Length: 249
Length: 249
Image (cartoon, rainbow over all chains, first blue to last red; front, side, top):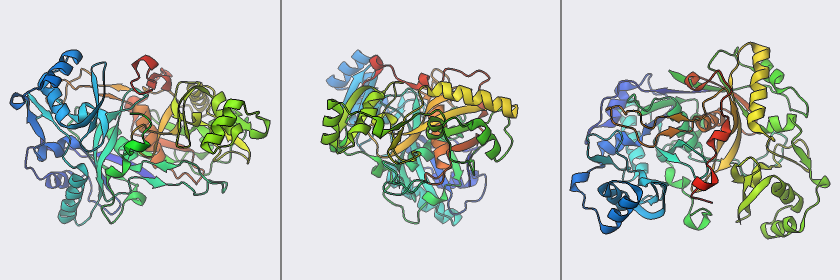
């Protein structure tokens, strides 16, 4: 089996209210077939859903102003980060590591100014990225007759390693984790602790197939059909480690 | 550009002293071309390098015996984990999170009994996975006339997310990080904090192209040539966050 990933070309700049499924369908390099996975950077979904904030309409609290001064940031930007956070885990070295309202642990609660629609605006994560993935999947199914797996991604840093990898923040039609625990290895012995974050590995694969500066937010992955499901499934929420099981907060 | 990943079929069980490059060359689905990336699960490299320990030759210290009792583990296995660790970060919920002698943060210092050559043995990480990658690259170049990028991988858990993703623990002939910091986005604005862990994304991609139970430790990735370098480069050591910059220990 060959796994392949190809970025969609020619997607236009997305605006609030746009039907991304229609734009994606028009840009598909090939007709969808069962087992296909469509990976979409969250920014286009956030823009379509209007998850964009104008900084000139944000009032920075005292806490945001203090944090911003300490970390050389825009106080209104920090305010938006705090608004999107359930908890601030660390503030150091100019980075705010947050638990987002969804439960993701990432820098700046995913709030970002790059690729924003205009200066002075920031893009938030989708309100419910699993719901966004389900809606996109359903609409793609209507338009094409095939329901691909859909993954919504963002780039997250990691605790102990440099650099970012794209991860799944939403998904539908996909088993996000593949569980080999208790299954035999190639010599018939039990495999230990083998529980694969398939959704995140697919997100990483898609990221390699596009260039960050080229307006290629969507990638078609083929050859991963064994992870694609008829049902929407548990979504990327299933990837979140519960606070009580988390050794690193 | 299409990214593709295909597992090599029919690699035999590897034994200490085997020349993996010869085995890989015989199993390549296509002739190597410049820009190819060869991803190899560390276990075959560890076996070829003799990085295997028989538990019946291990004497468990008092500390190992105590930890093993607390976490329902084999004391000799825990002793090997401690031997391979620079530091034990957390011991909880039956998991030992270690800093390996190389500086990787992972469960059980990468010491694993699954896929081991025989019962009562455990496989360690290669002593110097970047050196392993360089040697394999050099030997593949001799045998095929083409020097692919080589990545040595293991499956690591993540601090805040369930499941494991394959990551690079060694590499050669590859730029492990792609730095977009300071480069413009699609609208000419500066991209912020965009420093992509390409080596880890390639490791994740390869993992999707193989099945854990099928004896497919090596994967050929094509279409990622822009990350492949003439020189061996800094290796996966460049992915390690320095302790002083690490907010989560």
